Image 1 (tube, rainbow, N blue to C red):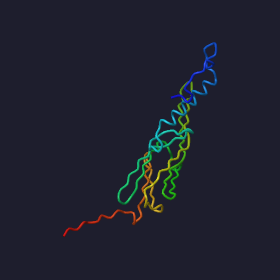
Image 2 (cartoon, helix red, strand yellow):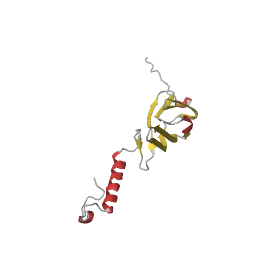
Image 3 (tube, rainbow, N blue to C red):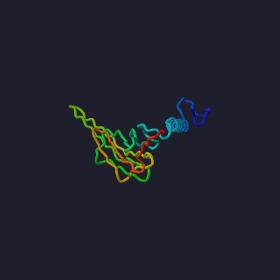
Image 4 (cartoon, rainbow, N blue to C red):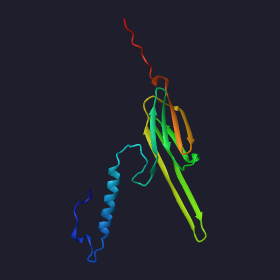
Length: 160
């Protein structure tokens, strides 16, 4: 749905080309459509409105731990930062990739780079001092232990 739904007769020049104002309006409509199409808070890989890459995350919880898996293909382990502040886990860093192919008549180079950051709210009772992180084959696994008071205790129901 366009940001400005009407079309002005002055949008087209006499020669049929599109005016600069129409090009700006079209680009703004595209940006708003992209921003509004994706639900906020989804744990999927995407580029945000500023063009920053956001990795895919999976989060699982059991009675003793919370595990967060992040897919970070092509990211060097030394470029990953993990912080736990209060009830939030932030995974951030930089992705840098460069390829080069030399042929007889040409050289083809490609570079991809950019920063990424994902923050997720952790369940209550996670101990920020008990965090382990492993990185294997482009997959980061962060395991957070729950505090002893947060570990669920099963209560047996007695009958008479």
